[in-house]
Image 1 (cartoon, rainbow, N blue to C red):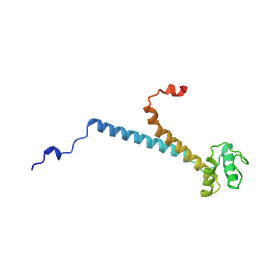
Image 2 (cartoon, helix red, strand yellow):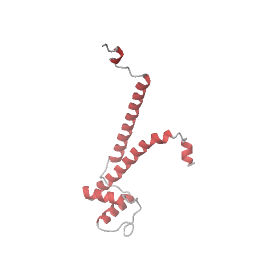
Image 3 (spheres, helix red, strand yellow):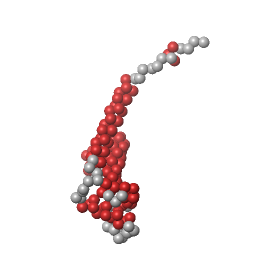
Image 4 (spheres, rainbow, N blue to C red):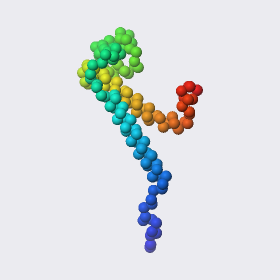
Amino acid sequence: MYLRESNHRKEEPKLSEKNAWHGNTFWLAAVAIILLFAVHLLYTGLGGYSDSYDAGVYLESARMMGRGFAPYRQIFVSQPPLWLPLIHFAFRLFGETFLAGQLVTATAGLIAVASVMALGPAVAALRIPVAQILRGS
């Protein structure tokens, strides 16, 4: 029995498949560059002195929560409900330092950047003009 010759040949990828692969590679590289840039911006200089009033209040609130004070009752809290417990957890892992609190903030920022990048294609697929989104209609 003879096998047909076409069964043994590897088919060449179609032109559109090659272009799709190159397009995906471009976008993956762009995403990687943006994430690396975000990591650089968010994590450079952590642990250093911060004269931000907010940073001091948030870190002190987390420290007080760790000492048994009740959030929203005995401690001023203007952050989302999980924020202070996350900072308190970082304090337990790394000690009560600026670095511990700043790591939580930087990681939350990186998650936000990655989330926006992940949702971008889904929003773009809706084909809603940017002006309409900004108007809120």
